[in-house]
Length: 453
Image: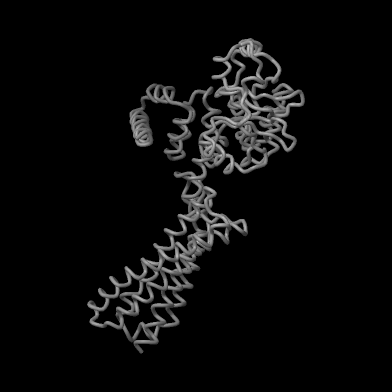
C-alpha cells in the first residue's frame, strides 16, 4: 500500500510540474520543488527528458543539489554534473554525510575533488580518504566514518554529559554508541534506549551489549544487506582486519543496496544496467542494447540451423511447421521459472554446493511432472487437429524431453556461471533460451523425421 501511494505521489508531482512548466508558471515550479525531499526531486528528474530535466535542475535549491545528485542514477547524474560550473559542484558537496560525499566525489572532475578535500580539516579528510580507499560495493565503501565512541569504564552520566556537549555534532540516524578500548578496537554497543533508561551511576560496561558483531570492511555490500536482514539490525559497526572501528553502516544505506540489487537483477536479464537513463538520447540507448540484441540474434541463428537440418521433414509435413513454436516456447517458460528461483536462491544464500543436488532432483521432478501433464494436453489437441495420433505422440514426447532438460538447465546454468564469476542474471537467460530452443527443436523434428518419414 505504501509503495502504491508513493508511486501515485510521484505521478501527481510529475503531472503538476509539467502543467506548471507548460503554463510558464515558474514560481509554481519552484514551490513544488521546494516542497519535495531531495530523493523525490531525484525521481522527478529521472522521469523527464534531458532538455526539461536541465531546465528544472536550475530551479532546484542549491542547498539540496548535493543530496539530489546522490539520489539519481549514474547516467542522469553525469548529465547534470556536465552542465554545472566547478563552483556549483563544490557547493553541492557541502553538508553531505560522509558516505554520500564519498559516493559523489568519485564521479566529480578531479579539480573539484581536490578542492573539496583541500577545504576539509585533517580529521574529516582522513575519514573521507578511508572510505574512498575501499571498493564502493564493499562494507568499507558503504560505511559512514562519522561515529560516536565511548570507553567501557566511564559512567553513563559522563556519557550523557558528553552527548549534550556535542549537541548537533552527533551524526544523524545515531541509535547506538560504539564501545571501544584505548586502541579503538570494537567491544560492543551502547543503545541510546539503554543509556537514557539506566542508572546514570552504572558504567558503560555494565549495560553495553556485545551481541552485535562487527562487519569486516572488505565484505561485499550484498553480504552486508544479508547480515542486516538476518539480524534485524538498524546500524552496525565496520571493522578492519585488526578489529578496529572504522565506521558504521545504517539501515538507510542497506535499503539503497537492496533496491540497487533488485534493479540490477531485473535490468540484467535484458542486458541493461540499473543506471541507464530512461530518457537517454536514441543513439546511446541503441548502442547499449545492440550488443544484447546481437547475442540473441546469434542464438536465433543456432535455432534456425537446427531447423535447417530437418528442412526436408518440414517441407514434406506442413503440420510440423505449424506446431514448431510450441515445444521450445514451453521449455523456455519452464526453464525461466527454475532459473529465476535459483538466481534468487543464490542471491539470498539459500543455494550452495551442499543442497544443489537436492534442488536439481526436485526441479527435475517438477519438470517431468509438468512435461507429462502438458504433453497429454498438447498431444491430444495436435492429434485431433491434424487427425494423426503419431504426430500427437511425437510432440508430447518432445515436450517431456524439453521440459526436463529446461528444469536441469535452470539449476545448472546459474551455478556454473557463479562458479566462474559471471553474473547469472546477466547471462543465464540467453544460455537457457539457446538450450531450450535447440533441444526442443531437435527433439520434435528429430522424432518426426524418424517416425513419420
